[in-house]
Amino acid sequence: MRYAICNELYGDLPFEDAFSHARDLGYTGLEIAPFTLGPDARSISKEERARVRAIAEGLGMEIIGLHWLLAKTEGYHLTSPDPQVRTRTISYFNELARLCRDLGGGLMVLGSPQQRSLAAGMTHEEGHTNAVSLLRECLPVFEECNVVMALEPLGPAETDFMCTAQSGIDIAAELDSPFVKLHLDVKAMSSEEKSIPQIIRDSKEWTFHFHANDPNLRGPGMGEVDFRPIFDALKETGYDGWISIEVFDYEPGIDALAGDSIRYMQEIEGMV
Image (cartoon, rainbow, N blue to C red):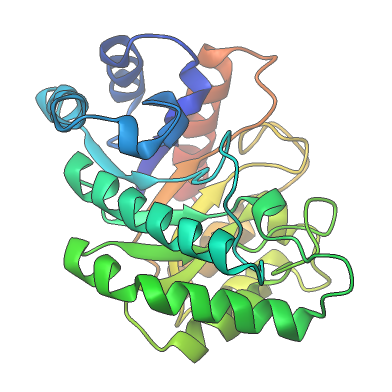
């Protein structure tokens, strides 16, 4: 398994210190939240992009991509029918793809629940059509940058659109592009009726990226989810992508969240 960690866990710690800490624990990949670089992707200079990439590469680390794409932004939305909002969102996704490429990454995780939930009165079918149409407009830039948009289903407590792995697959299948695939997240899958291992098996042809966490918002092994059946399913389906640690409850502290998570995963990996 290849282990990565989402960098917002490190808060305001300088990139040099954060990346070194992750490397020393055994992580080889970094997943970047754009807001940790600047409030707007277009404001992040070429020089800053090159600097952050050089820090990672100098430490033997790889920036694998971006997540929390629309966090702390305004005016963007995946399913909106408003032409101006759609145009702005397409333009911003394209700039995020360029940012991802400049950092050396090849994937963008599309979560952003608030920026995809359905407007009042909108049906799921209408939201699906709007999302497919918007992402289709981005495909030329995704291809130019060689960046995959990995669609992240999230639970109904967070959004009312794309709440199951199958709904993400349906969007990717309609787009029929190697640059739109599926992302699976353990916390999110825990809200589905299917078991997590079954979701992994059913999604094997589409899964491009994977987040390890627990419904308690902490890292793997820090809650009730047993990761051995999950790793069994990943191995069975031939998944060879990254396992990236994403947490939301920072109370235990960086050392516990980053360190205990990777130690638990390595222990589980040794059992499968």
